[in-house]
Image (tube, rainbow, N blue to C red; front, side, top):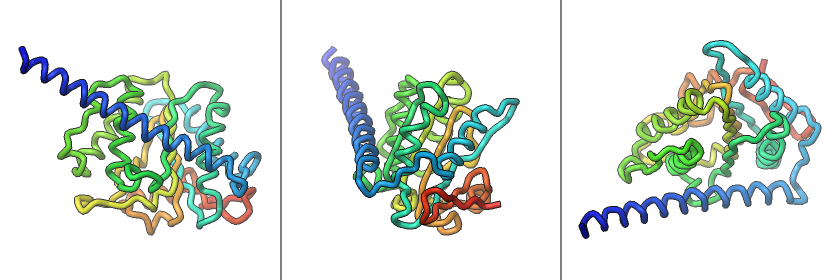
Length: 247
């Protein structure tokens, strides 16, 4: 009996630690999102072509119907000072109004916290948060798997499929700022950003920003080709009212 009791106590401790880790990371990035939006130097993207372009892409992909209809993530590229963090905040603040409903939103600012500095660690915490959103009990990742890119990549792809198959009434938006700042681990034997999907179901949307163009990011050749298409790639310019779209 003491052994059984110790087991349940240990499980409870692990569960509490897991929840604290996810909530602490989520709240830290929500606070950062609000800070970015409230800064005097923050660019106001309201009414700009860039924000309207993102809105149009997200709404169009959600309203598309038919078997196998899918879409890609949106990659926003711009140099330092073009308002990449502000655009993430603008999408976070406006996307519920765009869809006219409550959304499940996840926001991350790469490198802003220790857990968002490394590629696999950021992805692991996002996966655990997705498990909570899906009310799954498999949010406990074995410690050894934390350093296994293939394991974590597959876990993320599996959770995205769960949203497509079992959470059809939910709408998920994942926002990641400064993708280029993520540090790979030595165990990243493939392209470090290979976990970023090139195809998403209609109820899942991913918007990322980067200072580097796709050809300089740690992507696979297939990803690079996909992210240069007009329905995925937006280049920020000095004037916040303008955006360059690859055609």
